[in-house]
Image 1 (tube, helix red, strand yellow):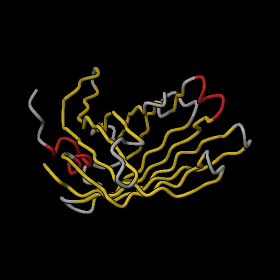
Image 2 (spheres, helix red, strand yellow):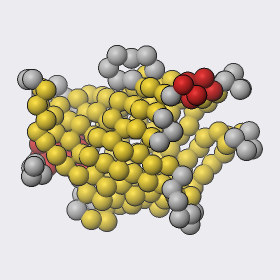
Image 3 (spheres, rainbow, N blue to C red):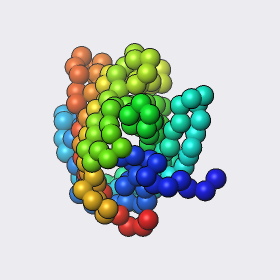
Image 4 (cartoon, helix red, strand yellow):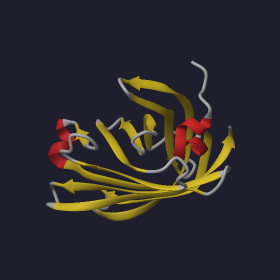
Length: 189
């Protein structure tokens, strides 16, 4: 299937391409230290456009993506994702569906216009639409309860994100925010 005109991807059109960010900041619970700490990281994201996808009368366009993040000069990534960014132009909905190899999946969504340069997505545990699922182990010891992300497109060559995943840690009997943020620069179209 040939790639669609990027205009059909609404606010996601500017995100098509290959991106790298070298100043990521992960603020999360560190198991070894038993405290919240900062991790600086670099990442690479490849986003390939596709569509249309027809769900009856719903028509979606999107980006198939793969992401990897590394601490400092590590060879193996400490975090990876595979998934889709989706645009439903008729409903004005932007969505992100992804899976991490820890055994968690998420579909987040929010309202946007086709020309939005800033948009937000969210997901909540137990939601029938924009929700979160975890494997049995994570559900018992480190359950994700909510996710929120804000994306800001700065132009054709950069965009940034700020996202928080709320995780209930059973051992601490406490809800902990896990925040990631980075600014991505285009390295290929």
